Image (cartoon, rainbow over all chains, first blue to last red):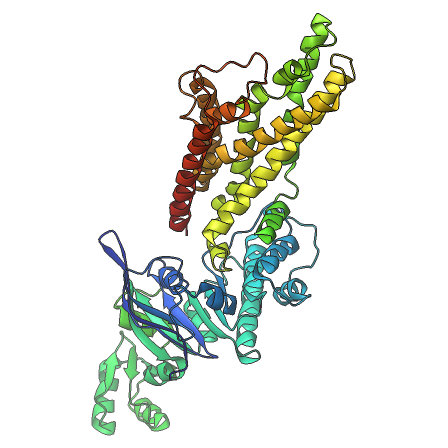
Amino acid sequence: MNDFMIETTQLTKMYGGQKAVNCVDLHVRKGRVYGLLGRNGAGKTTIMKMILGLTPITSGEVSVFGQNIKGREKRVYPRIGAIIETPGFYPNLTGTENLEIFARLRGTAAPNAVKDALEIVGLPYKDKKLFSKYSLGMKQRLGIANAILHDPELLILDEPTNGLDPIGIAEMREFIRKLSVEHGKTILLSSHILSEIAVLADEIGIIDHGVLLEETSMAELEKKNSKYILLEVSNVPKATLILERQFGLKDYSVQGDQTLRIYDTALDMAAVNKALVMQNIAVASSQLCNDTLEDYFKKITGGEGIA
Amino acid sequence: MLKLIQIEFMKLRRRKLVWLMLLASLVMPFFAFLYYGYFGKTGIDPAAFYKWSAFGYTMLIILPFVLGMLCTILMYNENRYDMLKQLWIVPVSRLGYFFSKFFVVLIYSVCFMLITAIASVLFSVLPGYVVFEWGSIFFLMKKCLEIALFTAFAMLPVLAVTASQKGYILSVCITLIYAFAGFFMTPINMYLHPLSCVSVIVSRSGDIPGLTLPQAVHAPVAILGIFLWSVAATLFAMVTLNRRK
């Protein structure tokens, strides 16, 4: 038996004649944070909706907690907390009143569940401010509070930092990590913000035009991402000549008039610098670089970066 | 279901319009008071007064319109603010969701007609137009409860349509058309429109003076008419709610 909390097999969604999600095989392991990364409209929300049974699947299968969700909603949903798109609440009620409604609907047993959930996301308990007066960030926090209200094992968070200010984003990231590390929650989150996924996710799925292009762990990704030495010199043709002749270097690329990328990171840079300076080539800088997630994203989607 | 109904009432907090609409229940009793006051009659037949105050425009226009407005209010927030998907993953069943709203409409309808009944008694007995007697009050209460119950069922099509609307303008327009259609269709065919069927059921015993119906009264046919409309409305609502995710 595998330890996947969510597993999809050849998951496909068609809208009219267009494939919004195309044969996606997703694997979310227990206790891990899975980041679904993709541009706006890539199919992230549709996948989440299909996982939750909120939209019909055209073909393929979804398994949550090792079972198909259809027909088992009453048993499965109480174990899931989710926010899909912008969470909506009753505008004529306060945040506390809104959560009390959901707590009653879920039959949440913990007496302080609403208070605790609000405290966790940094919203006041029994505040008189109506939801209609909430800022976008406060609405998002209330959505998260609603998702964690019943202490679910699995959280499905669609763009959880949408609308938050920079401090709010940092707090939310810390909070999500805490939920995973300290409380052992399994989290599937989507984002179009690369840095967010890079900071939060243990595992990553890159989706583009409905196709899951890559599914890997962040640790694997870091290994895969090429390291190189970025060398800035006054005379590139002369420098390449020296590198080839003196150091036998072949694995390099010229990036511009004054920049070289050397992919052999084991090269003795002190000796290279010395050799170049001896030949009257000024070395403006030499540094060890790593491909960023954005570089990787560009590489595998074959296009522009996203954030 | 009881929990869902209680929650529906929790959602109505600070909705002043819901409570203000109850004032509409006083409109016809007040006009009846003015009407009989103008002629200065006393000792009139209680049923004749109550026909004016409760069994006339209150039943045909005011109550259906008020209930239609309530249906719109009950459905508006969840449709407008895209809340249904949050409710489905609680999970709340579509049928439970729809019928919890219906029961709120039913309770509201009963409250509305009870206020109408009490106001009718007060506006008729206190000025001395009608002699106080328990028999006529029980008759009024019975008829008001019948109106409340059957009109609530007759409003199920409106509740189903409002479930499919994100805005409120179309819902209010549909409510108006629905209420007036019932009013104008009664002389043509009493068994086609659910609100006409309510008139048939209420006047089945012929004990409301002056209320004449153009066709022969068959209460079971009228009940069947309301039932068929209710089933159709529920099916429509289920299809709509399944689509709204």
